[in-house]
Length: 134
Image (cartoon, rainbow, N blue to C red; front, side, top):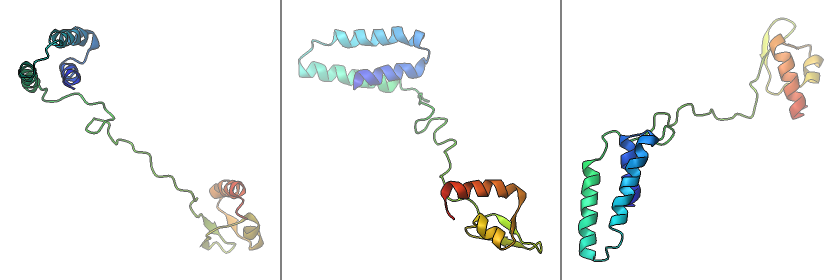
């Protein structure tokens, strides 16, 4: 609506609410003064003048909410997509060769004499116990 656009335009020029509030009250008085006009020709002239005034006072860099499209923080720090599966660790065989298994189970590892690298042991065993993949 014309009233709402007028308020937003005045807010573009003064972002402090204590300065903007008297301007908003003034805009409301202007709209209330023309409230009782019913004649279409007069309404058309008043609306055309108001549109011209809005165009004349248009701000070159209007305020946008930071997270809105065009705002300074729009699409900043988008959360990464969540991945369900854990990365496959490198496993060390007894002869120090490195193996990669798709879904290692603790009992399968110990049966074949394979030990998991120290950093992965606790993490992977707890992950397998949580998902019950054995």
